[in-house]
Image (cartoon, rainbow, N blue to C red):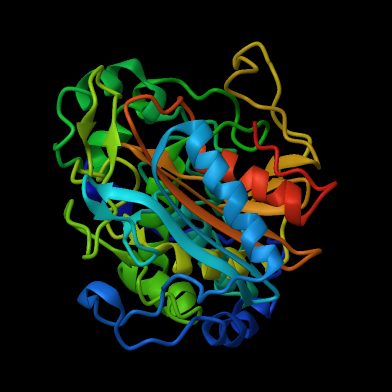
Length: 407
């Protein structure tokens, strides 16, 4: 399999489409979110362009409560660092950072970290814009752009964006993990990654169930680059991160992270070690491997969460003769995957967690509440996405009765 084989074009008849809706709030939220950012040319430590800084003291009662909850969660979870930002209707409630980036180096809100699957939310939103403009249809099959993909005449753009193609996930493939674990600095190509899911039969016929697979977004990116004729990083910047004013959210083609850096540590390989500069090329397609800081993450939560959702996966998933319930998770109105986002009790979120980094961006449209959290580990931090736990506790205080219960 070669990259050119996936990008080779051949004519086809266009299938029927259902129009996707993208709320204009994606753009209107820009003015709110950027206006809410504290303006400071330069802060402590000489960081240039400091627009993500701790909330000025004294804090009001709500901000103090959120910070108290965060401090307790940091202690309970034995975290090395926690960065957080909470906004309501685009206005800052609190921004802060607790703990250390490295020993003796204080964590700061403007430190950059890897944002992983947050890129999927941006890509899904950009796809919806193309659909809204009638340049493609969500139910267009992909054989025009990915002619050598098995079942390309059955798999649609919607299926790739919503994880309903039936492709296996290479990230959970034991053969892939056996190669990744001893070689965390390896640079992976899409061809190498796709070789793992494509050696398996599909879990189910495309569009008939739901299962998470990073392969879907490798393929969606390849299709979008062919559709638009521009690299994915340029497409997403023009459509999403640029309009939202996410100046510190960017793609990185190398394992480097823009300074200042929130350093990461993990015990994934059986001993506690620094993992900051492990190569993240396996996480998604080239051009979509992003870093960000917690203020951009909160703006992203607002911009993405304000859009109208397509709940097309509700009712899919569940155990079948070919797919176990642990893979084909049941999609319900209370908890389902949308186009690049997860919906939980009305919250719209993404929750990356890998190589010692954990984060969450969550938005509750009914309260216009955005919560962004990033965490790093000590040797005794429990497994799982600890940023989710911090965000859940904050949500319980600010939106009682609307649990942010992801698991």
